Length: 237
Image 1 (cartoon, rainbow, N blue to C red):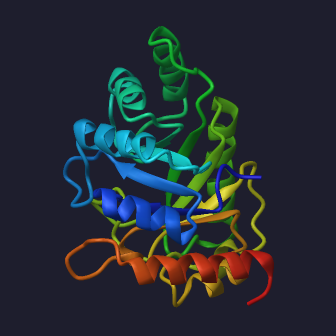
Image 2: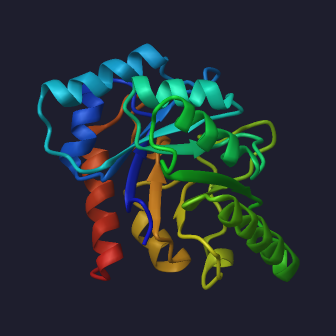
């Protein structure tokens, strides 16, 4: 079992936060990578966390903080201020960085066992058996370091994700990994069911796939995405 099944990432506004929850997402992602068009400041994230409390939202989902090459201290500070319950590493971090995060969380009187998701950027073509073995080895190292899940995203030179580029779903079908994996990269309401059927992930993650032209979340797109993903996971599509 993974940490979540359906994650909507890149939430920036309160209205989008509650629309995603109402749509049925069981995880939302807050992006703290400042160059990203979907980034939020620590203060904005804290405001979103406060909104959840103020509205007494009975939501048992995960609030995931997406970090790219942040320090362990910065991650711990943001976990506390934004009330995050999952950390996602999406940069050039190495497996040994997890122990630094655990140490910093403990020193900050936070839960040192906060789940950590590692984003792994995968080439569109895995490259056959050699590419598959390399991916399996990388995931195994992250599991050994203490990661709870991996998120497989399309590798795009010079980018850390959020590009909308798609993976080769067929290359992932039947692949054996040591951790549950979430599938990301170009997922929309129109293709998520097919992606789940082919790649057989434990979870799915979308950002640009449920946005309008103004890069705001589209409520109808989120509703359809969640409906299609839930049906596919249930085997009814």
